Length: 404
Image (cartoon, rainbow, N blue to C red; front, side):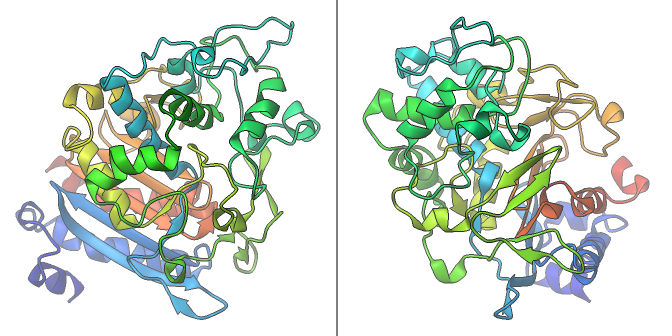
């Protein structure tokens, strides 16, 4: 019945209907994954959008946006994006590269002369914008570092905590932490995109929020997306994995992840003094973010040239460098699938993918003509838990479907 209703209301594309043995069953497969995650209390709420050839073939808002208030999730719910911010900021940055405002080979000190992190031996290497953009600069994230590391001792923010902290102060702290390796000689997920935000502001005299609105969110009509909250009534409450059910995230909560820990301050987004974190500071809705993914899938639309999108989608960091596991490399703003067999994924070579620690996951599979957004309000299940794998596999369906 649900499949029939989706078809009648135009939510299943013509190409989907042309493959009835596969895609007519898609809504039921995805519903089952979502309902199981909510019933098992792995997720509190989620919004999932799947588009093929630019047509939405599945949409679902499920669960609760605010469990304590009993408020249902809505498709236009606004989420704290965390690292879902990165591709938005990188699109704006690469637009400025197109315009000749930067060269990717430029030194960071050309724009931020006081930002001079040192190696362990005390030497000061050159860091390029390319290295910041690809996380090959030697910088890190506090969330990846053990307690007692310089990132903790210097109280460096990952852009998720410390309401009211300025970018100048965070860059001052970051510049005092030793680099993990010489720039260009490794890969480590990092605050590099926050530094790029500072570069963009220094080069133009405009604020990062103004640049993002002018270069990306404005042209694409992403009215819900920014560094503040466009409508607080639609803001989803964040939760963290817990037993017997997820727990509401409060300011100061520190939640273990990948051998480190993430320090959250959900109230940060309401403090106008909080710096605009290019790597983690934006908010927005699933329909908004799908607009960006579709612009990228189709070659840039009104924001970038096709050549720039192709450059961003090419692996700048070799496969297996540490990004999303075996078979994945890294481009400008996301992981790039190089070897699906090594990865064990049904996604096609060239798939772009990333997520966010507040509980999000997205991917674009150009060969399959797919754009997928899965925003949740549950960290970290919605970013890297079983839900993400089950959802992906349900989208691609049985082996017979993948051959069609």
